Image (cartoon, rainbow, N blue to C red; front, side, top):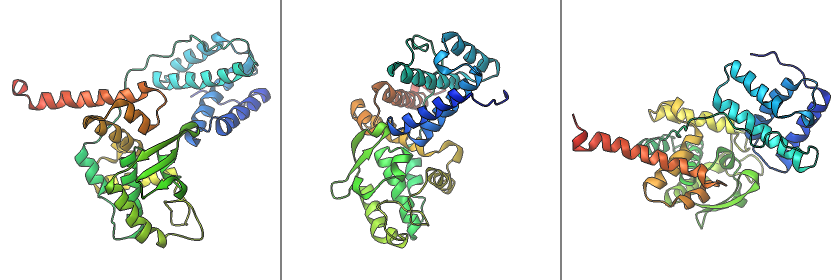
Length: 304
């Protein structure tokens, strides 16, 4: 691993400014901001005393070539370039550079990686794993059910507030990436688990006043990290490989299972909050792969 160097004063100042922009204007999640900042900082270290506004296409190509030499994979290098594109677009739009050096720069080829998806039977086992005889079990059951029922991002689930919950209409008002608002319906099962938690579970967790729907043992909203650990715990209870199950896998399951049952791709795009339909189209490939597997396993001409 290359030795970490301190950033020049001017590049450190820009990095702090850019992070502030991502948080205040783009309203990116903490995870996204941290990723962009890390990738951009690596390039700024590579530049040394050269200011970012003086960097050109050759600097970027040499940086990516150096990453390749160090054994950094194509997917990570493509992510690095995405962070640089965002930073240079920011500078260009504000008139601080005349030419964006990332324009027409070809990204490293990244092969298509299909999302991991559980079978519907495994999802059912997982959703039934919490012990609903206890307040925390009621909370966990409601959270897992809502995550799968609505295809939420983890940050959207753990930050859910009563002002965003329309229990009587079975609708969530979610503010997703970039502050983009979307309405998501949830079904009878999720409503029943939510109602049970709110009536029988949440009162035992309240400490003072809070508008957060899902509370931790301190009476505050759960963190993403705590929810992640909760998912791993219930994967083990349900007999599912914990390495194969993350909160985001349930979002993949939500999309894929909807398409398997005939949902329109545009509708799934709206429910997931994807800006680009191409992002959603990956789930149609997952569905096709599943059909191929079923055909290979079940068609009489494929049997040995």
